[in-house]
Image (cartoon, rainbow over all chains, first blue to last red; front, side):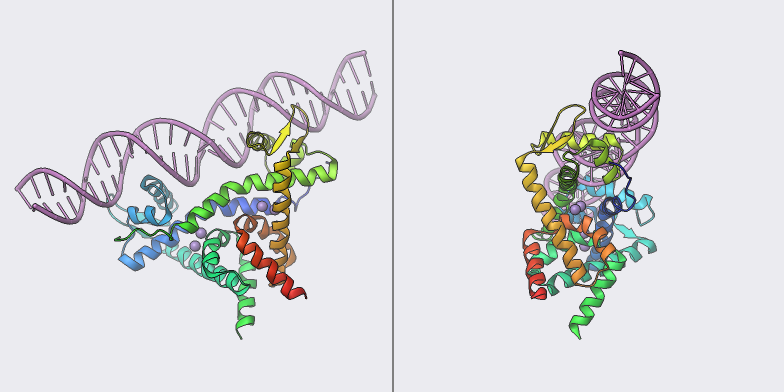
Length: 140
Length: 140
DNA sequence: ATAAAATTGTAGCCAAGGCTACATTCCGCA
DNA sequence: TGCGGAATGTAGCCTTGGCTACAATTTTAT
Ligand SMILES: [Mn+2]
Ligand SMILES: [Mn+2]
Ligand SMILES: [Mn+2]
Ligand SMILES: [Mn+2]
């Protein structure tokens, strides 16, 4: 190969970064959901909803705490910090927009919900804005 | 939590599976691209295009070989098996459809290309079919 | 009040996917 | 022809995100 390509690798870099953020985003969103439903998020419930063994959830929560997104005391529930709540809000909003867009272009409801769980983490802010504009256009 | 939820975890399972397939898909597609351009895919070119160090590409190729998707001899290029070529074809097709759909709903071209690199791996066959139907509808 | 059950913590294993450092092989050119 | 630089291989390290097994704690029920 003769030239190095500066733009070529960008998409892959982005995809890798998104993949590493995905788990954090899903946990934060789920903790927020459980807090709304039960007042707190228990490790067992997190693990059950995410479909993993409980030590996996424990490890993930440890990382969230390390990153300042959550707090918890031993044998007690997990709670989001302000920063965590803010992330939960934007993640939830993005999730909803992605599902709505998929449905708007003809994806069946159940499929849209399933695929959105993965797709959402790769939708940049500019793409999200385009989705919102499209949905607005289509609704009016 | 009272009940276990059978459907709730599905989206997360799917997303995890897709994430683990993503690397394989990108490598296979890239090997196919390089083969078309240069007649063979060299480790150095793969690494450069994917934006990783060369031992990372070597490891990935080792996995492809283990899975029967590629073959190679020491210090020589990497080639896809029939199975690998088939995967490359479908991955490339999916990539194109995703980019086309993003553009069709108003995402700027460069952004569409970047985001598609991650999104493509989470688009199920049913969603892909819906995208194609939408694009056909819109074109005619 | 206490024993059983459920929940949480902890230890330690594995594979994947990054990396750097260094060894080896190949290839183009003087 | 042979040498130096480029390409590739290999070793070994790290983090993440899975898991099982077992220990400790808390909650529930008798
Ligand atoms: Mn998700
Ligand atoms: Mn989500
Ligand atoms: Mn990709
Ligand atoms: Mn692609």
